[in-house]
Image 1 (cartoon, each protein chain N blue to C red):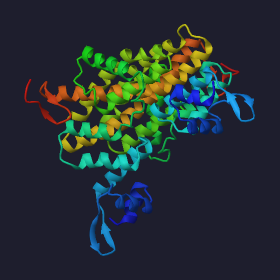
Image 2 (image 1 turned 180 degrees about the horizontal axis):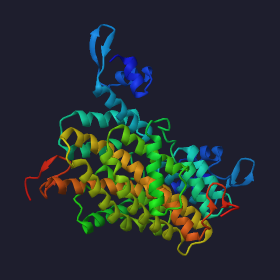
Image 3 (image 1 turned 90 degrees about the vertical axis):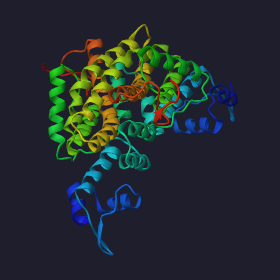
Image 4 (image 1 turned 180 degrees about the vertical axis):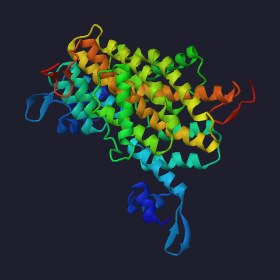
Length: 222
Length: 222
């Protein structure tokens, strides 16, 4: 198909498609003349993936490129996981914090206690240490204590994730699943947690069943 | 204390403090002369909070201002939760997706099945619907199926969260806890999930115990 049809079928505007081509996020189509190229289903799929990672996953174009490079290079899924984690993880602030070492020791102990084979110097561990150090600095030991409570839930979730991406799938689908699952899974989990906060808070405060969340008061009728 | 000491004690550079003052994130100190003001412990605390929300939580200055406005206005914790959720939630793309309605129905059913009192039209629900619609568009029904598997874990986590911020705390600490817990809790949970991915993947692939995650191969010695 021509670029116009590619745009129509994906809803991505032509100038945006051209931008992705220039940035190397989208592979060039097959050239049929000096000014024309044709595109196929792989381009549609790739455009949908770029949109999912940017619009829903909130990744920058630079990060999407890193992630897609990992998808395109022939690595085993475990290494793709590492590359994806390196690419999507925001730089963790606070490495200079006076609480960094204390926080790092607590995370190291958690990995040991749970028997997780995970890298204490990798990007996710650094993010976790930064968050913990920040809670210490704010004097919120109560919230830092959530670490050990979250861990079993995270472990179960990760098992669901790995089972989902490896089940009856070819290697390409698995690799794509690692990327999409890592990014969109985080979005889903965070949103579910915040939805559950609404419920748990309403329950804890004993708000009436007909409490209007938007208006901040109970409705007039039950 | 003077601004120089405020800077020294928090590690936030003076120009950054001045920027936060101009932007209204930090309340002015008590003026002692036309060119001087003194600051107290509340300013230290506020600067630490701004740093946690921006550097670790990844929020923009505009979002931090919205969140802090919620902290500063005398609302009940449940309403602060709503304001914080409105402020931190990224705009969810994909409302025009052909899968939006299908995704929305699935989220509505989930809320009903779990008996969650949560707002299907609020920001977290919209984020969740957008992620789900995106998975449908990518043909990843397998990953969409994680929704119902994540939900019980999210529910348990939210109960831990609410218990932590309401336990033996005054109203101000509770409100601050809602803000910090919502933002840094998401960071912790996401990082834990990605750490657990390393472990779950190594286990699923049967990688050797001495597999070197960084180098992509087993070490030479056990």
